[in-house]
Image (cartoon, rainbow, N blue to C red; front, top):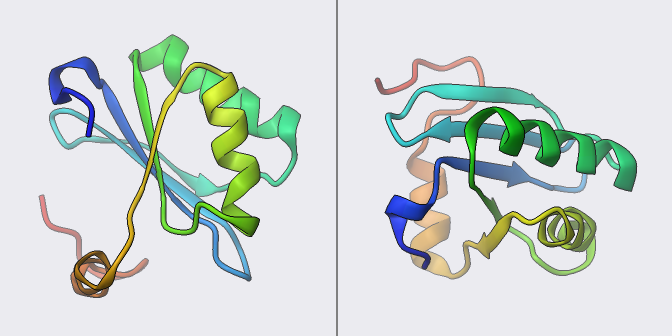
Length: 107
């Protein structure tokens, strides 16, 4: 994991089989991006470039780095973002404990 002080925005990607979604928070925990994720290289690059231009260094985290998660990760790397992926049963349990869209969020 990179030095947290070097990251300004954490961008989580949900790249499941259906709709893809991205949510980003800054170091203070404020949501700065929460939208469906485009599925084309130029549109993905636009998302990553805009976040970096407005907020600084971005860490992109995806739950499925192979196959359906490969394009966003490749574009993020090429755009200069740091990338990581969540993996394993502990991360799966953490994801299940998070609120879903439409539910109350923790501050």
